[in-house]
Image (cartoon, rainbow, N blue to C red; front, side):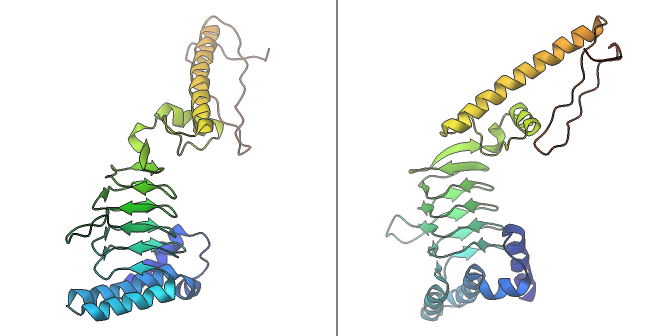
Amino acid sequence: MFDRIREDIRSVYARDPAARNAFEILTTYPGLHAIWLHRLSHWLWGRGLRWLARWLSTLGRWLTGIEIHPGARIGRRFFIDHGMGVVIGETAEIGDDCTLYHGVTLGGTSWKEGKRHPTLEDNVVVGAGAKILGPITLAQGSRVGSNAVVLKDVEPGATVVGIPGRVVQKREEVDPKRAEMAQKLGFDAYGMAQDMPDPVAHAINCMLDHIRVLDERVEQLSAQVRSMGGEVESVALPSLSGVAMPEEAPADNATPESGNK
């Protein structure tokens, strides 16, 4: 039991930069309190003490503002940030290392018995106010944007936003050359998908592609000039961090530079 508590505390340190010490986490994080109460109520639920389990769950909701049905199955290192307004239904299943923010609902869309709530696989992150409804599956590593409403299965590593939820990015679809150019120029490439609805992100993507083509052509022209005995000024590209980025070494047949033009 104490190993699991220490594991929960370490998971908070890993995902919340506001956490300062273990005592603060133990006493002021309602997400942790709700999870610990749920473990007890889930144990009671599994042994047929249904009313007592529901009473303990209600007490946890009253104390933390987080409602977790005793029948829900939750994995290790689960983290609820802030927590107020989170609702997790009876047949919901949550894998390891998942994160929910405040206002998230893992709800059902049917009154029939059986599986009617979502399944979250490992390393899923659900943003504030999002609603995940029905017996759907959010595959490993997927992300849900704030206030999105998700009604269909989500593939591994996908990012979902909007109402109804739509996939705007898959990790495997990110252009590696575009990401390399973004890093070179100091842009954060995260979230810049080709079909991103944000017009600013789309414009930045187009600029990155254009700059990459120009950069490759300039390198080719410089190599040709050097091969013919010409001199090309070597200038290190500045970065946003203030540290100059090293220039690639010239070709073997390039003439060493004796000065700048």
